[in-house]
Length: 266
Image (cartoon, rainbow, N blue to C red; front, side, top):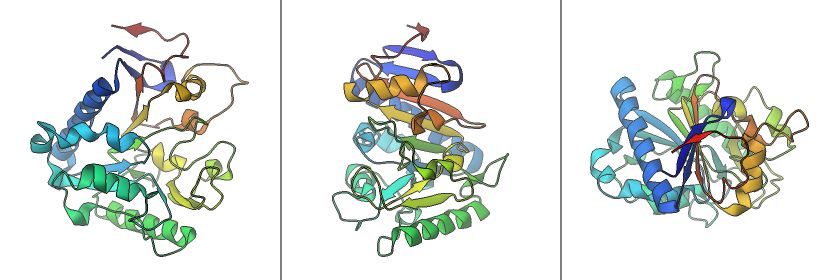
């Protein structure tokens, strides 16, 4: 690892020399959390996102992880999804299926994708219901401080505008407090119809990993992490603050290039 440090309330920062190094560290991190969760609860409930994240998780499909991870104990969800057919190029499910799920022995019934044959609103309602049933059986834990699900790990990317999942800057969904899963039909980024975890669910997770690469994300990383005073724009990524969980940022050097006043150790 190039640099590692902790930035007050913004979690642990891991800055890497290369995408190869980041991918290996990310695989180690996920495998360790999986092992700890299976040991403690018997299952590992993980929520994925789209974008470059799945490719950066690719090391999990290789040795030693493909043999040492207890894949049969994984329950897979999506922190956000585009309301398109599962075989559509824009589908986060398709991205994960092609890049990860077909390459490791995941139990098919443990993969919880959205209903792609209904409206965005109905898909969000249906997905929330599925998660509630799994919370009842404790396949997904429940938060100690509210009734939200407590995923073992939520993996998030970040857009150059600072959006996470399908929570976009200055959008009313950022204020949603009651629903676990909600929907958007006017996404600033195509496709327009999506479902997304809400901030209370994201912030109830045991672990949240923000995986961000590329120089085009550097300004958003700066605004999300650095202490810029009361006039700092509040990006969705800055609102990711796990209540009783851990937040880790996986960055490459270009994405971290505008970070200020962070004390790192070699």
